[in-house]
Amino acid sequence: MATISNKKLISLKRKFNKLNIAVIGDMMLDAYFWGDVRRISPEAPVPVVEVENEFFRFGGAANVALNIIKLGGTPYPVGVIGYDTYGTIFSSLLNDTNIMNDGIVVDDSRPTTTKTRVIADNQHVVRIDKESKQYLNKDIQNKAYAYIEKSINELDGIILQDYNKGVLSPAIIEKTIKLANKHGVLITVDPKFNNFFCYKNVTVFKPNRKEAEDVLGMKIKTDEDISTAGIKLLEKLNSKYVLLTLGEGGIAIFEKGKKERIMPTKARKVADVSGAGDTVISTLTMALAAGANILEASYLANYAGGLVCEEVGIVPIELDKLFNTVMDENE
Image (spheres, helix red, strand yellow):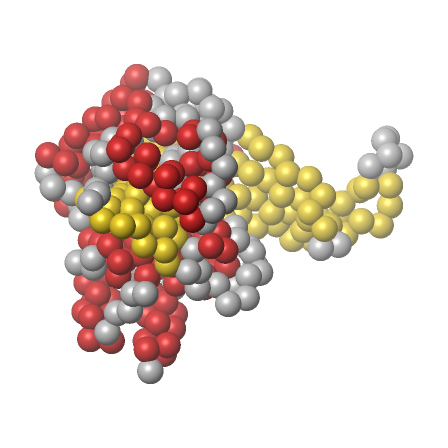
């Protein structure tokens, strides 16, 4: 339904390299332990995993920041880590990927949010979560917001990436949206269940089907359901756009006074959907900040989400791969 000429694509790609995007939300670390199982523990009837490899990657809002830098932009991550080993590893990853850490506040009262996956013989054995879901204390909230306020004139866009781990409190949400609107900075939201209706007056609100079903108390199966859900969200949130992501059903785009538009998925061979939502919100925000309209931005975001679904694991989108793939399809 939407296409972008190669001339427009070249212009957008060039502008991507000049964009500054704040990513505010729950920073996470993904830890992986790979190994083999050759025996059962003598202490309990459980397998003993002999670890052969371990590595760490960004998760949550940090993965959104990684997507921004891979798309050529400059991310301004704003969030919290703990004063612990995983916080040190997180800071090292920031340094390795050339992502600034000025907006990352260290809070020694909580752990660095970490998801540890143990994988043996190509089987996911267990996941261990280390996190706090409590809202940040006022002092930490004030430090985080002070950085947002200081940086606002440098920003082309803001992403609020919520995983309900405590960074995005109602107070931070409200103040950040007001600040963005006051300065004319576009603001996009990837929500979770808590605080869902706190995100009023933003540029784009992007829930997935399950999130919308949970808060609206309805099943979204038919085209009529999709339409009803999108219209309700537009009315309740007063956002400029609502993008309802539907998995294999693509993206439904809602705008006040206009009929919704459905954009089919661009995944050609789905290997793993992990991280696709992070890629979609990153690409969408970058495209809008670069001057794309909502249909063009959604088209690029949909493509980017499809491309990362073809990879195994949480993999960020690459600028050249995205634009080259779209241009190749235009030919």
